[in-house]
Length: 148
Image 1 (cartoon, rainbow, N blue to C red):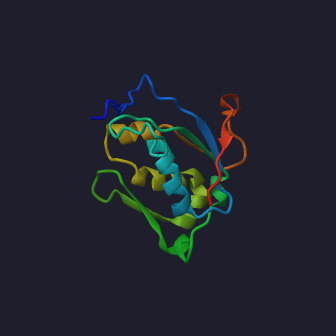
Image 2: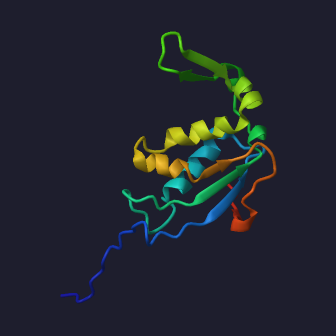
Image 3: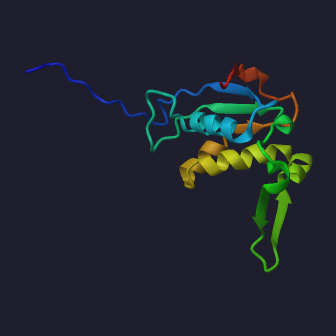
């Protein structure tokens, strides 16, 4: 009989090590980029991934106003919001969203890919999206993250 015993190590909030990554969204396709970002926010790229623990990394996205969609999504894709009151539903196309709130395009896409629980809401707080090149997180020394 084999005397070696292997024990699965389960991560908890005290043992999780978080890194900071920066993503340049210029000329990136929104959906493809956001799937990678959601994967990193959940922590699924780590060998110590534990489903019930927020073990993901912090992600900074710059140049959110320079992302691209495939096809005719700029004119056809709509974002709906509802205030809860009768007649309170509003819609914006992706083009209007890019002009008014360029960060919301990426935030909505990533948020939709994360769990709809308390854990998912904690994960989305580690996403920082900026329309331009500047960001206030230089002190964290983020590593650059490239997607294929």
